[in-house]
Image 1 (cartoon, rainbow, N blue to C red):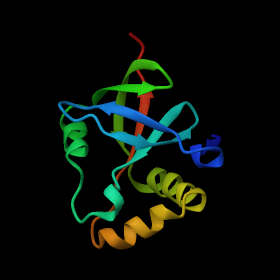
Image 2 (image 1 turned 120 degrees about the vertical axis):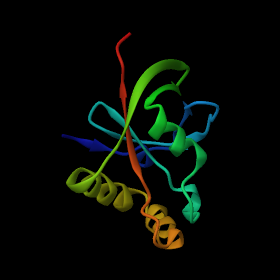
Image 3 (image 1 turned 180 degrees about the vertical axis):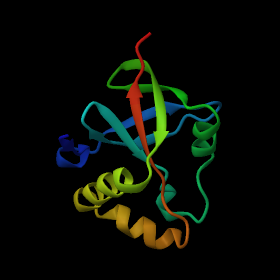
Length: 116
């Protein structure tokens, strides 16, 4: 699986509609999936949108003028490690956010386009 990072070019953002939350998030890609991080700049608690995604994983993504449904999944184990490690190499600020977050592990969330 090829891992590409939006950080390789310019910073790209997407809007994630999860319940009432609509955060603008920097994203990376992992194959055909988008990847976002519930980093909040290293805050000690998870962002509200992350809790919405846990409860309602069917989300809406707005990206490059297109809006589409997607399914969010929180990565774990080796998959999380692989994605996180690559992302930190490409976006070193993520490592600093993890330090600031203390004991909170920053969640790595994949977004897979859902066919309608």
